[in-house]
Structures are given as structure tokens and as C-alpha cells.
Amino acid sequence: MTQNLLKLDFGAALPEGGSVPRNGSEWDALEEALRDADGWLRSDANRRRDGFGWLDLPQADLAEVIEAGQWLAAFDAVIQVGIGGSALGSLMVANALLHPCHNELSRSERGPRLYVADNADPAGTRALWEMVDPSRTALVVVSKSGSTAETMANFLWLWENLKKVLGEERALKQLLVVTDPEKGLLRAFVAEKKCRSLPLPSTVGGRYSVLSAVGLAASAALGVDVTDLQAGARAMDEVLLGAGTMEENPAWLLAGLHWLHFLRGRNMTVLMPYADGLRDFTEWFAQLWGESLGKEGKGSTPLRALGAVDQHSQVQLYTAGPDDKLFTIIDVADRGERLILPSPSDASLAPLAYLGGQEMGAMLQAEARATAATLASLGRPVLWLEIPRLDAFRLGGLVYLYEVVTALTGRLLSVDPFDQPGVEQGKRFTYGLMGRKGFEEEGRKSTEAFARIESRTVSC
Ligand SMILES: O=P(O)(O)OC[C@H]1O[C@](O)(CO)[C@@H](O)[C@@H]1O
Image (tube, rainbow, N blue to C red; front, side):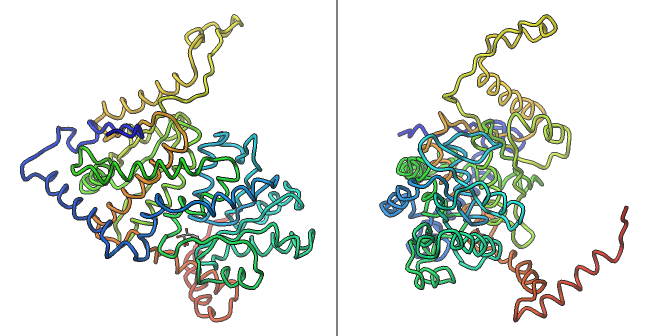
């Protein structure tokens, strides 16, 4: 039974551009491997293991999250402090479902403005603080580990300033902490201060946490129907559970095609939605894909693109550069918004008559089709992923789909899609360079390694 979640056209993404090979072929072997990978992902043995907890989020009770969202909605502004998986999810949901204008922070007619402090850049943090009225602002600090330096730096500075303006007692009433239910520095802070908190289940990894309080609390405050978002993920899960071939199962298909193109040297994947609202979906995907699969020298590079914007920036490379990419063009069939273009009234603009009477969204869709057709005509592997409209239900489905695709692809690559050991060295070097006690050796090693970089210089 279709759930009207999406349509995925893959005719031009089959290796060698041919039909689906059968009978003991590479495709059959791959399908078998995907069946195993799916079994591994959904096995009872793994279900409670670290990293697998996101599979349960579509069924989770959202009462606490919705209550927190209602509490946050009473403020004029919500500052979410977090980085990576502790920020990208909220940004993606808010920018997809509310005012999808990629040059401005999310806001909704009804709810508060959402500000996301997701970098330790003093200019950004100061500017953000100066945009809000502290007495009408809630601070939401999100960190699974509770110790990420950038998040803690922003939290310390914003929390101390909030306390300075409001006094601790009142400031505590405007604070929400989202972190591990048992461990970590922030959990200790909650215990000490008895402030509001929501758990990020310990079996859920940061980049797989958008359908938890991490992505949903602020989204709910802005008026996003988080119940519908979750229902979309559940509907996608039902589709995937009921589909036992690559042609029926969009997760197996996407994971399988990425694998087949890896083997053929295409280790970059371009996600190019033709909708401003999905710009941050590509940012969210980039962390999910890159941090899950980039291991042991394997993995594929996620390239963020936005249609039609990157037609005027990257498409030259996509059409005439190296044939090392798999493309996914995402289109939204019904954009809701309609802008009919006027016929030019100025004589000098007469050559634009072809635009007159056109609907801008139809033009954007024509551009999406034209880009996909161009790539296909050049033999570049391209997928066409179409969602009926960009609403909470479809976004929930898309999010869950890509989480499953990423986990299955990790299994095919024989890497652990749920850890990220490669990020730790940089953090230790940072602590060393900042003079953190116990990291002296890391500081020395980092300075030594950096000396190689600055051993040769040209400056002007
Ligand atoms: O939620 P935390 O623990 O602050 O981590 C933030 C992000 O940093 C990382 O650990 C990478 O350094 C990501 O995996 C994670 O999403």
C-alpha cells in the first residue's frame, strides 16, 4: 500500500545505464547482502545497542517533547545551543517547514524565532545575543556528551549573560537542557540546578537524533506538527519493513546503488533538492553520510547542492567534470506557493515575454527536470526523488529513509555507521592548545604537527 511519501525514479542510475540484471548477477548478490544488512540493523540483539536507538524513535511517546514545545512557544525567541547532530536537525526541520527562505533564521507567524548557536564564533554569538530580549528568551542547550567544547563555550557565555540580566532563579526558569539521561556534565548540571531537561536516549547517536527531543522540542515550539513528522517516519518504516527487493525498497535501492557506484569509482554523492526549504536537509544529510561512512579509507563524500542555485555554480563540474558522482535530484510536486510571472511591460524587457504567465514553481520544476535530463543524457548516474509536497509527514519519511540508507550502506562497506572515532584527535589537540590540564602532550604534538604546515610560507 503506497503511503504517498515519495517516488524514486532510478532508471538512469543503474550501472552501465542498463536494465536491472538478474540471475546470479551482481544485483542478486547485492540484494542478498542488503537483506542481511537489514536483518542486522533490525535484529533484537542490536536493538538495544548503542547507535541503534533511532530505530525506535518513530514509535516513541512525544508527550514530554510536545509539552516542552508548548512551554518554549510562550517565549519570543528560542536559542538552541548545540553543534553537529545537536543543531542540524532543528535547523533542517524548521527551515523545511517554516518560512523556507535560506537567507533568514526560522520564524513562524505563531511561534518564537529560533536562533541556533552552532559555532564558537564570537561575532556570531554576540550578534545572536544582541538580537534577543533576554527576558523573553529561552535557552535550550543540547549535547549528547555534555562536553563538546563549542557548545559548552556558547552555553557558558549565554548562560552567564542570561543570569546577569535576569538573576539565576529567573534564568533557570528559561532554560531547557537536552542531554544523555544518566551521564555527562550537563546531566550533572541538571541535577545540581533542578532545571528543565529532556533525555536524548543513550542508544541514539547525535546525527541520528533529529526525531528525538534534540530536533523536535524547538520545532514543536515553532509550530511544527511533530506528531505528523513522526508519523511520516513510521509510515516509511512500514514501507521498508514490507519491501523485500531492491525495486520495492527505496532504502535498499539507494544503499545498493551507492554501493554499485562506489565499486565503479563514483565515491561522491550529490544531493540537489530544488526547494529552498530542503537546503538544510542537505546539511543534515552531509553529517549523517560523512560521519557514518567515512572510515578506514572508505565512504563517499556528500556534496550539498541546491537547485536552481547550483546550476549557476556546480553544474559545469557535474556535466563536464570527472564522472565520479552519483546524483540525486529532489523535486517537490506541489509547492503550495504559486507566483505567476507578469509579462514584461518595459520595451527593453520584451525578450522576456516567454516568462509571462509562467508559474515560478513550474519553472523551477522544469529546471530540475532539465538538470536531471542533462545528466542522464551524458550517461551520468542520476536519481529523481519526488515528494508530493514538503510537509511534516513527508519530511519525517525522508529523514527516516536516509537514516536507514546510511546504516545499510555502512554495513555494505563493513564500517560501523554509528561511531565517529575520527573526530576525537582534533578535539584533544584543541584541548592541548587551549592549555587544558591533562592535554599538555596533545598540545605539544599539535604544535609539532602544525609546524610542518607553517614550515613553508608565502605571505603577501
Ligand atoms: O551532542 P554532542 O555530544 O555535543 O556532539 C555534537 C556533535 O559532535 C560530534 O560528536 C562530532 O564531534 C557529532 O557526532 C555530534 O553530533
